[in-house]
Length: 597
Image (tube, rainbow, N blue to C red; front, side):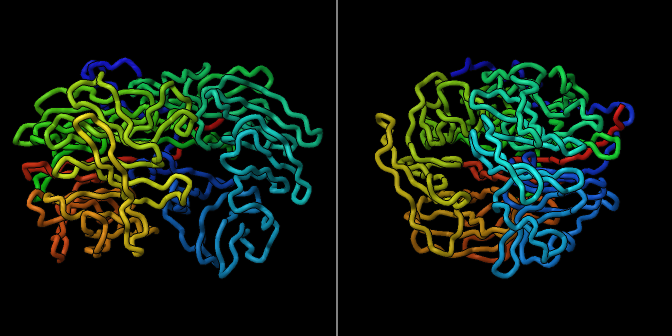
């Protein structure tokens, strides 16, 4: 486990809002797209058309948006024209927009000409690139380690074995070579070049500090340079990936093809710059802007008051005098590895009464602490690993619920579960005997959350049993659950898909579920009960942003509690019933342009 430090010593670093954009002469902001999501926003993929007139925004949940960079308006009609549903899309040289979609019983890749089947042979999960004229393509299957890369003219593809996992690729301007960035298990990446006609492969640069997530790269018009996004100019330091305060934001580097030397060409403070593209003599790239904080709102509604800058997913202590939360940045190079948990004091007037201090710290992602009703224990979700792993899904990582004595950060972490997959926060039952949390079923269908209850023996700190609550068939994905104050009922946030959400109320054993409300949402919004058990507080879409609402437990019209300029989510009501703590997020994805020298 990493050394635990006092959070106040680096509060300005960890919790500081981005220090402002760095703009070089000639930099132009082309497009600014605000997001109303949580972790999904920073991981959205952006692709620009070869004529720089259009942009595709593809979210991690499968949402696709098609924007005109000239008018800055969305064009959903052109994206979906002739298809019943579009799952993803990309650009392919002069051939234009290619969509993976459904039409009647067909599900395949469609060109603009819906009857063309030139790309129908591609697997539906193919990740591919096209040469500038669209005559050659390259594709691979996602998630494959040491898998195959197929490239060449349509109908004449050749298989190239690649040692590692491909994260980005691009054709040379003349189409004779394919460049790829390959992530290795140990955490470093290599830049390789494949000469398609001779079928030879060469490593141009190794020990690159790149993101393990999928991205893009660009080749200079003269073919002498490759533009890639890297966190640093040196080899990656896996231990540094886990530090919330580490300066490991992605920058655009220019790599010399002949020497492998690299130097930074685009960077800005506390912001990721990535997805380089070269179009008509200009370098284009994406930039993530995110500001998150923990705020409190009066239980009856009103303006949000910031408690701490740089935090997400609040949890109240039993006496309503402290709030626990996760902190760290959604750095693309170290996705979620740097998340730790902290605690801050709050007085009866909803004002911060102490400096933040770290309460949970270790390798990999940590969610905030949930205090047992007597305050002696904390339960939390963690991806704890014994060593500093290089990426989110590395071997050696867990994804489970842990238990620990609350006031001793060095106390042993007791692992309660061993089956988790995208597990959510844990919540204590009012009697302090059980923990409620959501999780996918390992080996099952991704994206489908179930609710689980673990009964705990607090005398020795161990799990007695874990049960999956039986859910009504009508509940599609129970991604958030909350105990009623008397412990006899559970409120459930159900992700219905395509932005549709529902709130259900079930008995404590999961039976007799009844729908309370349908609404619109964009992410894991969260919900909680008021202290008297008469209403449910939840996060829902109001216009373009997420706000807090209240709906009576007995049914009736919901009431909007907030009208904030940011997105409010993950509401938790203080035990004394006075305040609602929640996450506030303001984030956007920008597209920038700079003339090439």
